[in-house]
Length: 248
Image (cartoon, rainbow, N blue to C red; front, side, top):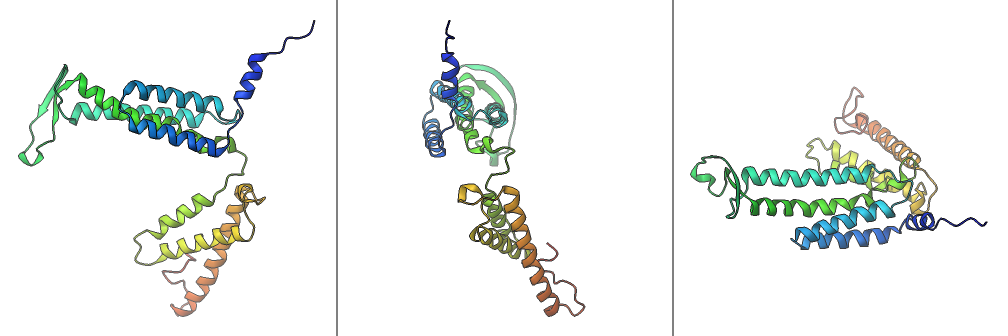
């Protein structure tokens, strides 16, 4: 007797196929826009359920479940925090009063701000709705964390490296060391990419570690040259100048 094929297993395998990144981002933008444009809690709950199901069902099978669980927990924290803030400090909307907190008297300059007072069902529903909007957006965010690349050492570090350089460039450092270091990191990263030290998504064959090691090597070379020049021109005893890169 011929074996009967497991249709449900084949269907699950077909559903588990990973999607193109562009499809993920288009879908995520549509869900986020729909969530932020509506104030209907039932529609928001439906969008959240669809987002969770889609991320859980269509992500690659080797993807870790940590990102999805983490963002769901963050969404729950946002909802609870928004409701708590409404209970303690929110506007006292008229409606069906559920309970009342002791009200703290405030000076005249704090007009419009309240601490404690009656809490109505309408105010809690409004706070829940306002917290549910960002929570739904968080539910679809895990697709952008690339969990399928976890542990493979193939992720492109360029964005993170350049973001660190940009943060250093905006630091309020009178000595100029932060700006100099930011420039060195930026030049090292772009120089490495220009010389072919790139991850697979940019047409190269280097791993994440190899790209970062190359950037560090180039920064060290730049810092060494700058340190020699600064030691000759700024301090007679040969020690590094405060703004050189040797001490970074």
